[in-house]
Amino acid sequence: MGGSLGKKESSKNYSSESKLDAKMVETMRRRAAQGSSMKSFNTIILKFPKIDESFKKCKTIFEQFDEDSNGAIDPDELRRCFHKLQVDFTEEEINDFFKACDIDENMAIKFNEFIVLLCLVYLLKEPTTSQAKSRLGLPELESTFQTLVDAFVFLDKNKDGHVSKSEMVEAINESTSGGRSSGRIAMRRFDEMDWDKNGMVTFKEFLFAFTRWLGIGGTEEEEEE
Ligand SMILES: [Ca+2]
Ligand SMILES: [Ca+2]
Ligand SMILES: [Ca+2]
Image (cartoon, rainbow, N blue to C red; front, side, top):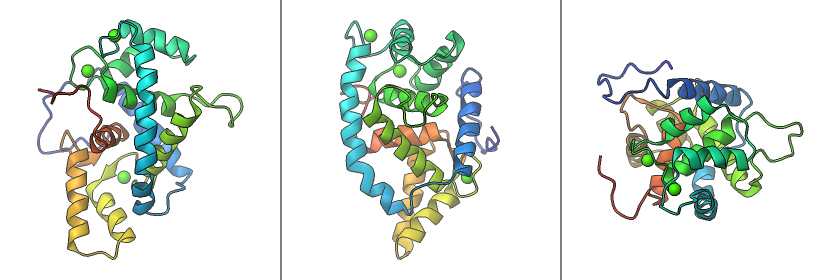
């Protein structure tokens, strides 16, 4: 996992999700070696409306898998969701996805958590025989996920599977004419992403930040810890 040398040790228990997180970081490293189609931070900003639209459409998929329509996906519903999407992960792996994305630990996957979960499934699923074939049968959404992977890879300059604060600042500075304000914006954006405050942002944290920036919450009301 590397970068867990933050001053504050997080009180959250990561043991249950560490395997999945490690796999995620490893996969991002592999992807980083292939390079990114992103040329600048502005390219990412320009994609925001499309990402937003695509996430909103994802609501239909969410509702389809929320069989009892209680606004969340429980472990059984998630198992059937994986089955319907024809992604073959083991029972243990499906539980890992569940735990890794259930950030408020209420044993239910809400909409924002579902988006992150699907994107991680997309990332970690081995491509099927043909590269052209979609992995989840959700081509439009998958192209958005690909955009997010590309954006993360673009930011991860040293290709270690994490985005550090300096990488974030570098990415923003090289796309604007510089100046202090852009640096400050970069810092703020970074702090929003780095929820465990260990100075490193993983792809999962990056995804959750996107759902927040786009105003996609779990429920209508603010979530209490
Ligand atoms: Ca449900
Ligand atoms: Ca939850
Ligand atoms: Ca990095």
